[in-house]
Length: 70
Image 1 (cartoon, one colour):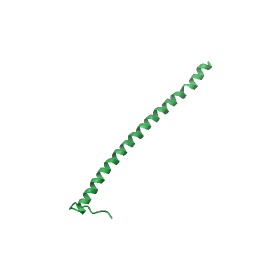
Image 2 (tube, rainbow, N blue to C red):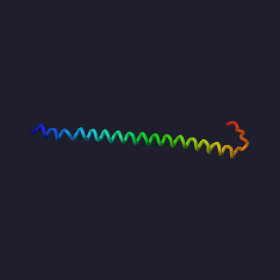
Image 3 (cartoon, one colour):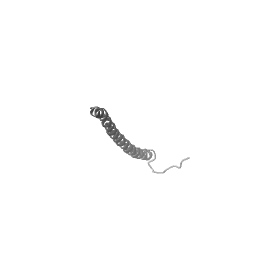
Image 4 (spheres, helix red, strand yellow):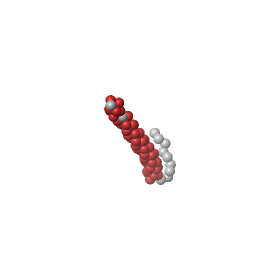
């Protein structure tokens, strides 16, 4: 009878550990997906801001001549 009781006590613990491991894996995937999305957004914004900077340069200096930096 003790063997049945000890199984009921021991059995839920590995299930909980497996549950936590599965939750951790899903959390890790969400974090990686969010990081990838943020990196993609950063690259997009760098492109947009670079294009905007070139547009402003052309508006300020329509001849296209670049003055040397001091």
